[in-house]
Structure formats: C-alpha cells, structure tokens
Image: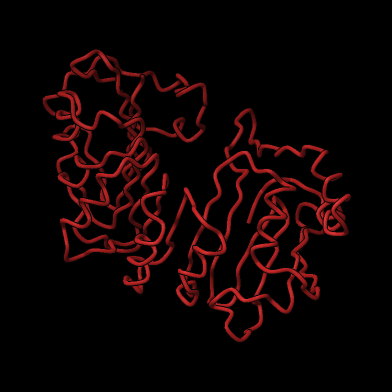
Length: 329
C-alpha cells in the first residue's frame, strides 16, 4: 500500500496506451506529506504486501491494487492473475469508506510493477512486507519478479523457516529490516551475524511476543544507524550500554528506541553516569531539523557526552516503559 496521493483516474488513463503513460509520467507527480499540526510525517512510501496467502498488494498512494483475492492455480508462483481489484476511497471524515472495484487482468505481475514504478516514480525506498499467510508465496518467484528490495518486514514469527529463507533470499541488499521474532532462537551466532550487518534501520521484537535471546551483548553488536527493540521482557543493563557508548561503542548509532512491558527506573538508568544537562520539560527536542511530537510526552530528558565530545540525549517517555536515545553528529 503506497500513500502517494495520485488520482485513480490518472493511473487508469496511464494504462490506455504508451502515449497516455508518457503523458501521466510527464506530470511529475509528487507525494503530498501527511501533516499533523506543524509536524510533517515521513509516510509516503511504495509498499508490496503479501498477506493471507491470497493477496498481493501494490498500492500507489491512496490506491491499493490487489491480486489473488480469490484462489488461483499456481498463484504462489505469481502467475498472471485472472483479475485485479482496485480499492478506492469514497467520502470524507466519518463518511469515509473503501470500495473494491473488480477488473479483468491482461498484465503479468512484473508488468504491473514496472508500470507503476515508471508512472509514480517513488522518491523513497520500496518496502516489501509479509504478514500472516504470506508464507504461501514462493520466495524464488518473488525475487524473480521484483528483484532487489532495500526494506523488508516480517510481521509474523511463524513459520521461522520461511523467515530464514526470506533473509537468505534478500540479504545482503537490505538496508532496513523488521522482525517480530528471533528467526534463530537456538543459534546465537547466526543472530549476531545478522545484527552485526550495517543496516540503516533495524526494528526487532514485539511487546506481545517473546523475542528469544535479546540482551546487552546483542545490542552492543548492532551496527545499524537506527535501532528499535520492542520486548515483552526487560532488557537489562541499559545503564551499562550507555556507559559503554560514552567510551566509544556503537559508533554508527544515530537513534535507538527500547520499549518494554516493565518500567525503566531513572535512578538505575543514570547510576554512575555524568549528566551534562537536564532538558526542561517545556523545551522542544528537534533532532536533525525534525520536531517529533512524541518527545513532548516525556518524564525526563538528559544529555550525556561521549569521550570525543559527541552529545547523546536520553528520553524517558511517560509511563516509563519506553526510552529514546538520540546521537547528535
């Protein structure tokens, strides 16, 4: 599902002929950012979804194009769909509803994909997401049709062998990775080989599921720029992590979020750590020129300093179950 505001009529017109395709392309459509108040959210994105074992979604902006909503022979191999459905938005506000319009199909999945990429020309990375039931599709066929992906998410934990095969299929091209559960619960070395890769973003775990074997050692070995751990258990020794960061660990780290079911205790979190500055509650925290509204709802925010003078900000959110760590370069 892509959130790149493009009128349905323009997409349909682009399918009529090569000339109309070029005409729509020439409009140079640009995404309209989603804004709350004065905060612009980085939402526009091209996404390909596999879910329920029956549907493949390629959705440009407010449009969702669906295939295999009804079972079809060899659909797991992404054979040419008999039909496709376009989901359109009708009404506004509380009267908003979504309607699926059914069409006969004449294009291969690859042709659909290439056509939409050409017309929409997304400015951001393309993201592939698997949800429950998506394991019914053949990974080899997916790789053949879609090629390389830089952002991949598995929004389920079972079957783990499918997640393992998915990682083998799309690594090492991945820049962003989302995992609900540990694909290697009994193989610590394999997990660390995954964590040590130079991802731009690594988002792992879930508050509702136990992510086996996730501790301080795993956090220290992460090389991602942006790390997010969501845990149903307590991640111990965050205090030690901060001390090690101050001494030079995790040099690539830019942001880190840890959320868990158990409260963080400020007195334990900052024990033995020299605080450079307490950030007043009324002060906005603007990181890399972006004002993030969620930082307003905090219990405490402090600055600490690495041995080389690099500043780090630790933010404890209201409820004390989430902390954010920002590194200022």
